[in-house]
Length: 512
Ligand code: GLU
Image (cartoon, rainbow, N blue to C red; front, side, top):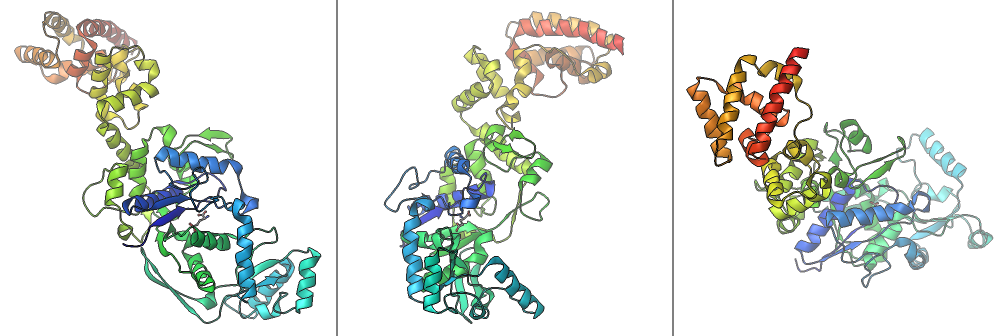
């Protein structure tokens, strides 16, 4: 590629940024980094009615957390600013004027009622396109049908008006989309889109293409929902005699069931977030966690969203952000929608967590489990972490997985105590306490050998002792190796827990 790559993420700050938006940002970022290009963040805030002030901060904070850093943005202006469309307002007027002067756009004065009446008329006549276009503009109230004096008078009167694009008739509009190949539309399907509104602001279409041109955007990588706007954009580029960028429209992220776009409701239904950061659920009047608060690592999150619609073409599934950059290509983006899979999402996090080096994992866990880990001996903490590392999906799982290393059980899985702890084995537990007490090296292997040879000598099966032993040490049935647990908590604590367990188990059994 010899073209200079400049790409942009151009969100509208109208609400919380969805993971689909972050994926768009990520693909733009990866493509820019891979090509030695520039990644730009542009805030598209021309729609004053839908503008939400906090949404821009949410976008910035989400990108920051994910590690997707823009080279040029409102916060880090380059040579193509401003990077917020509301601050570029004056600039668009000149371009609208150019189209008006060249007879490629016109003023329109129709009221809502007049527009409705036009659609109604066309509907009754059985027309398939009930729109403002080459067939209808001649019957409407605009600068093409009014005299220039009337038009001038209207404009000077301060009454509302819009500027519409004069979509040419009968043209075949073709463009190459990296994901979809050649895309063809007929200009007859398209209407005379509004480019400029009565409030003095350009519409999305106008601002978007003027900015992409002025910011020298080489590739427009955006969601599939914008594909149907692209023929209009192509026609606008043509009207200005500008070269259109290369397009790549990304597939939808689908519901876990596979049909329809993933929405906030799906998240609520299945209990997973669809927003990167915490957000306020107005309907329920509560703050809800995003991926960050749930415990996703930024790299695991990027790894997961990268795979929504892209794959490297190899078996490799785990990638750091740098590895993603190296492996990424627009050509490997799929056309079909990508289904959201919560189990897989968690898998990415579990794997990334496990692959952190010990130091990084320790400091992460110390942050999220300070009540448990503060003031604890380093060696003990390291052993505890190593023991349960593979069992955690989120850093917050540490307490659930390793809590028993720090505190003796305060309760026991009573159902299993009743089922697995047999009175006839009490003398064996007593003998084991003796045997353990005599051990010089309190190590996992020693403890295991001692217990196993005791079982052998007494012709006992594992089931007679092991479940009880585990329940005594942890209160639970599942978990990591019980010998490792005993080794970590130490001899004294092990023996103490065994003795307490024996007393408590008899009480539990007596109570049932
Ligand atoms: N402002 C549009 C959005 O919110 C940008 C679409 C585009 O990338 O052209 O998604």
